Length: 323
Image (cartoon, rainbow, N blue to C red):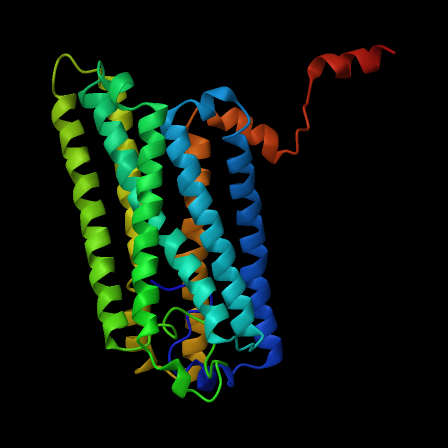
């Protein structure tokens, strides 16, 4: 999974073909949307903590966890991008901490989507037992398990890194820009990364697809609320789209490698910047926008906070005119 700058092994040679003005332009084109998206995500996070109904409903708690992971991931991605654009080379320990945190938050998203899909499945297929199965406590346990599982993966990556003979290096200063590719030192780390990524997304895809099929079957039952089943089916389709967007980040590197063989380096660097915006920035903000617009409970509160709490009240306006 790739982040921030997403430089390939020879990114230093590629970056030298970019002038300062062009790098400043691309940095601005990515930083400005990123700041807008961070504002929207931050407002959504605040919204999900502004009312008791959001803090006491399992699906809103899971949504908060998803948005929190996406927001942290987007922040780290942009930080790494700016570091690469400024041609700043970090040390291996500093880069390792940043990329491991990026790994952690990036892997939380598909697992949270999987839990959210299972919650919708229980709500439709077992409506009478939903309140018993899906409680605040069980939701909290599920979130803890998700973060613990992802943390275990990060710990495994750190152990694999320790096998590299860093003591043989003249300096811990990196020769390349910081990225998760630069931290895949040795074949074992590379093989583990590919295997874990495949396992993660295959598991999430199977869980979400199975939930969707279960909801479709339940929707045909006469005892099932048709409106609720239809809404849950659309939500699960949304989860599949979100999972696909997350999956697109895992094929980002192979696409760039193939592209680097057929286009000029300057063109490659420009395409790389466009891919970063389309694959990393936009999907990170998609969840908050879609949920904020679709959910009738969240929508008015979100719009209120996005408008900086500016209320357009008719009554005060009339009172002012009368005076």
